[in-house]
Length: 168
Image 1 (tube, rainbow, N blue to C red):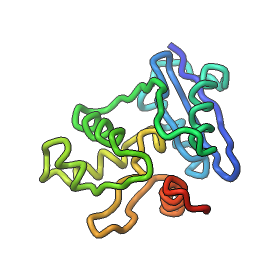
Image 2: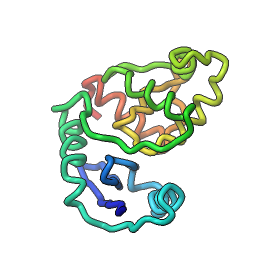
Image 3: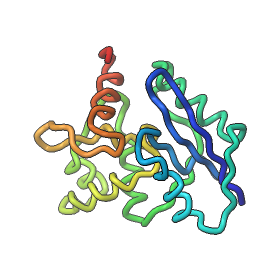
């Protein structure tokens, strides 16, 4: 199997994206440590060939561009998410958060029927390899405060304002 990756730019946003034949497996901001995607791919796909090639990622990048242009609210693309069963539950719950809305970590814990697992939910959200599309930016603290986001709190705030239709 080959894992394909590329970079994507949209206005001031820059991303790394990677996909297998099963679907998108990684999407992250380029401004993070240059090797974040590389470390992820080596851990997740230690024996697979990794190739820079944007062709297999065209449909994924197109949906991301449509979202960032304000022309898409829901993603239809295939995902290749790999994680523990708990992480999978959390990531599925994230995908149920409607565009432009926010929920708390407690809300996610309750939605997966593990109301006391708020910290574990936070850890699983932090391990989400496909940001924006698996919308971890829509999760906020119980007090309404913006909390951790691997793209940085500035990016999280911009995404939330964008989804609410506020110019940033």
